[in-house]
Length: 254
Image (cartoon, rainbow, N blue to C red):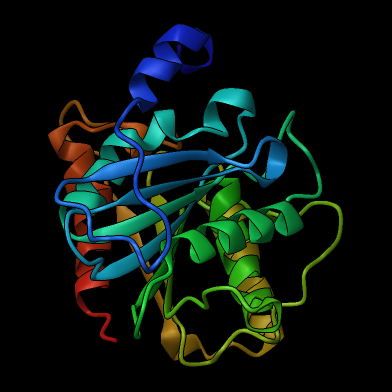
């Protein structure tokens, strides 16, 4: 159903007033969005809250073609994060299910970081879903040497083992102080294999196990916690996925 979104409907879903430029611009008085900045796989969207951002969230989407490579499927969650004071960066990073996505993601995040021009220390969360859940971890590993925002915490939601599929990314540079939260859904057919293999990658890299938090989103009543459940904005989905993220963000301090 989501793949059938028309270009007109997609444009309507994404339409908001464009935000201002870098750190020298006045602070916005209401939430705003700019993007896509740069076309193609290096494109990126920036969502800004009213006032000065309290957090920076880098949102890595799943593998799903042209619609998933826009914020449309995740817009409700992004708006929730923005309304709670976070600036959200959404890198496109792929076109046509590309294998090599890490470098385009880094390029888009660099563009957004320069445009945001955040001053001072702002806590950073890398939030990823499905393929993006693994890509968020891989991004955190390369971010210090790429001179882009380094995550203080990572939340991997319904992860697959690898985000970058053109090569295996070395996770050893991950900062051992990074908070690593893995959130899986109990009806996700990929949950066991995806999370287990990703956790094995972390273990083999020497990442400290005590920094890893494993949580399970549980099905109940009419709510089915499957692989696509994080795309929902229904109350049960918000409780299962948004609330743990809010708690994680609340624990990050600049």
